[in-house]
Length: 323
Length: 250
Image (cartoon, rainbow over all chains, first blue to last red; front, side):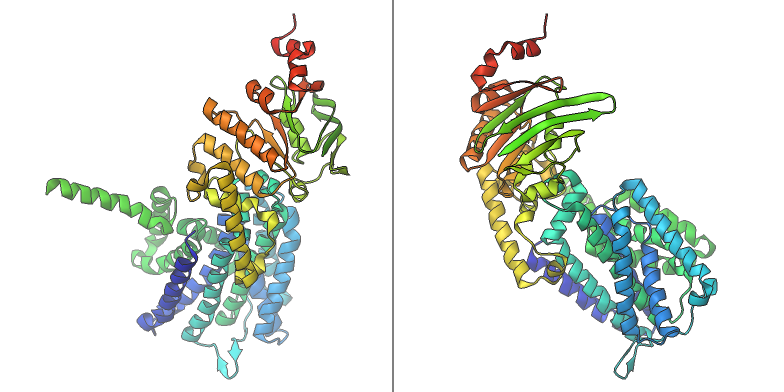
């Protein structure tokens, strides 16, 4: 898990890179993509707390993301609430929903939990489509205002980049703290042996629900950020496909690694942009890459150093022999 | 300390335990023995809240704790180990014991996320205590190893260290000597005595008769889900019914 100091150093290094990244890519449309990397990082880290640490799967994360976006969107565009207040309301409502459904749902394990969360995701997706008066239905909700702070309006990619990455960095910092605490250890204990964790006095049921709720709240905040930077949302962004994509980010990045989730989010968000050169075959290349990565790097992107170093050592040894 | 009254457990058509009663005095080492399938582990699972019995009650320090969840029993000072060693395999030896200190600390999600001073103080305290627990079983040198990579004998010791971190009033050991060689078994015997010496009541299910006869104050014998005999090691060794059950009748 690394010591206190290396954790802090890692975080500062990472924050520094985030801070200067726009200087390298400024102006390009890549800035827009990097904004999405920030949002997806929040979502992937949130899911990783649940899946990678507590060992509980969720195929309904897109629903919490969507609920955050829609509650924020409707509250501001239709009812004229301030975006910041709307974001807070959305987080509170989504937190309550997650806490309420968490108790019955998290009694289930493995495939059954996957099915239950999948069902929840589909119900919410249908609700977005069918409650046309409220959400605008399949054609979406328009006219969502930008965030403002004093006289500054967050209406450009550059401003939104810093806004969203501020939240993403906060998510990362709080998550790293959490997983290295007594709560984080209890979560990993539940993952390895729930019965032993309970015998040690860990209230596994409550803790799972709490983490599920935390994960939902973070996703909801990401949803609000998304709504107020895009100013337009439609149900298509919050469907089953996106839940699976988030799951892929977490697995590809590395289960049980906060920074791994960033790597997974970055790769899966940037990859489609780079694969444009394959034109119609981009989806084939995308799929192929994912298959190869899961086959040869099951530990995820974050384990690349561990994956490469034996190969390097072998090469070195080989060179030594010939010399 | 612990009293069990009229425990009956029926699984489908099979009666695993029938009207079993016994009690454990404070500070004693109680052995539970019996041929395979006698219901020893089932009895442990009921006492520690993992199974819910068909009938009967469990009392801990004269308080009824029937069907309490394991986490609630942990708060009341009851802890156990498992026949098949249930370690947190992906975590380090140290972290395993730190989880054992869960009930001795109380920082929640919020203070952990924000790293409040109270959280930092508590973490330091947990670390110190965990090291002391590892010292107790002689695993301090292995603190940073991943628990899943420990040799089997050390895994058993770690499980006991983790349980002792809870500062229990009573510890239930489910076949602690299974899979240990004779040297390790002797060490285990000494450790169990040391545990009792620190004021903890011990109940153990065990097949290693030498160990049981050596360390237990009293022994309960189960056979086919029923209480067959109870007494001191000497009484049990001379009991004709016990001899018949172990050697087979006729």
